[in-house]
Length: 242
Image (tube, rainbow, N blue to C red):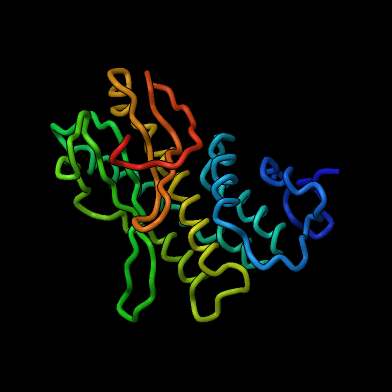
């Protein structure tokens, strides 16, 4: 019997948990008592599954939190989706549109890279933020890349870092939770931002690949836009070879 998205209903957990990954674990119980952590590869697959469901950012984050709590039970997982502010998407849309205008003659891009860069605040706490890099058509080297004038300034990503890496961090969230939720949010946000009408028009001339990842980590090619449509991908990326 496969683990079910509804096994934990009696404990007050929500339905609609991504099950594509969990089908692997046919011999294991839903709560998986004793599991010490979650692998980044498992997060990647759930992120890809969530994108393909075409759910809202909020629903996608909730599904990831339900899945993670099902693997390594801890109510702290369920706090992560609740920390997304209502004005964050508006902030991100304004930032993204401004960066596209600033790119000017470098458009259309062949690749949009939503890069998670890590910083430290005034008391040394680490947190990520999103920058945007455009790889022009027929670029020859990194010198041809166009970097965003500013980072997004995401409050949600700071909240993730504060919960997962703070002095009172809950067991099991740690760095894997920090990376997994940061990547999931950035992927879902990138999908929404790339519904931009200008990009859809550009994609009728040539496909545009969408990549997300930490500066010092794996890069995920999550999507390509072609002829005005979004096609989801499941692959790792090397920017120089895209």
